[in-house]
Image 1 (spheres, helix red, strand yellow):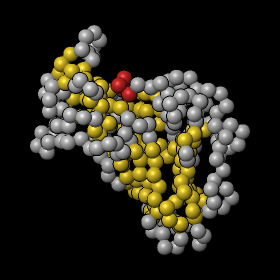
Image 2: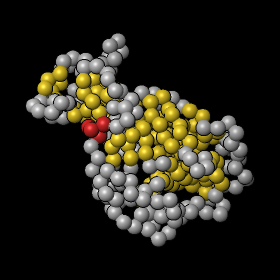
Image 3: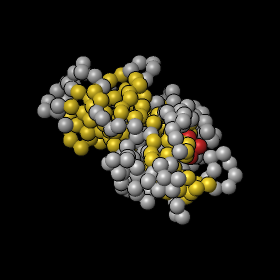
Image 4: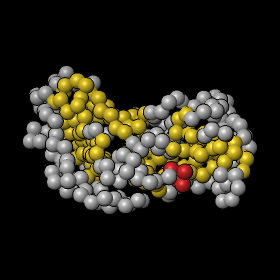
Length: 270
């Protein structure tokens, strides 16, 4: 069995880009493909029944019938995907036993690193990067992810991890940490996504702004759209990396640069 990872962007519409200049010609909010991104994977597996969802008193449990397709050990596997290309996790994975698997799960580090830049075909008004009054930047204004910058889901501001300028400076990977999957610090689960501590349980205490607290893993559980049988040939995992790749052009032409959803994972068998 082969596992492929592909990058996908989920937003309202793709940015219109001039094929010659590479400039964004869209005047509204839109999305771009990141130049590349990194995810950190601990484990991928299949289950014959829904895994036990974590709570503050119960740990995540894939069950006795689960089969681990991949396990990294104590340190997660760093997987880098460039410009939405597919990447093969391993060619050594074996097909699961002759059972039928209906659910899958992925355990990740609660962060993603994104590298992206955008160039615009028209002048933009924006907040002065150096502080003070707003400034108008000319055609070919750039937004780019700042190397070494970090931002958190809870009360984080992606604009602090982006630079607006007329040339690329410290362009590089920005790290997004997930200390919440909702709009407040007390929400640690959303559908089949859970933020858990090393124990596999949801932290009992609140997480402070700009802090991971006890959060150590992001667990994502799927009900597969097709059961896994002997006919299954492979598994696709894809990631929504909208953070730092959604271009926000607010009303009045003020450029606020990158923003977007935190993170999403999808699993499909084929």
